[in-house]
Amino acid sequence: MLKSIQTFFFNLFNWKQRSKAKRYEKLLIKGIINKEKEKIKLIREASAMIPKKTKKGVSQYIPMSYTTRAKIKAMILADYGFKMKVLGMSITDDLKFI
Image (cartoon, rainbow, N blue to C red):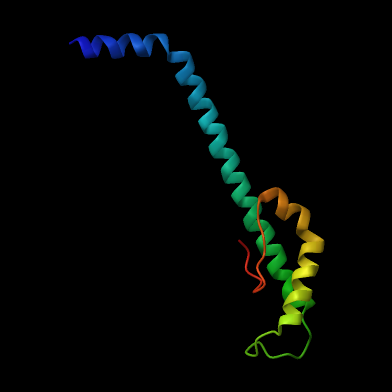
């Protein structure tokens, strides 16, 4: 009985803080979802750019050399480097986005 009275008064006096917390939680969730959307969009744009920058006539079954991957990585960083920093992303030497 005492426990239920305590929780009632706790909820009564702290309803403003709880409502603010719920509002902030909703805003944070929306922000996280928007950030993930931007990351996916950036990955798609950069991945679509990779075939355009590779040499023509090279078979897709032959892996790219290290120098080719390094050049492509430098091009991607030159074009999308600032966006990647803002979103907290990076690209590996194997052209995988983290």
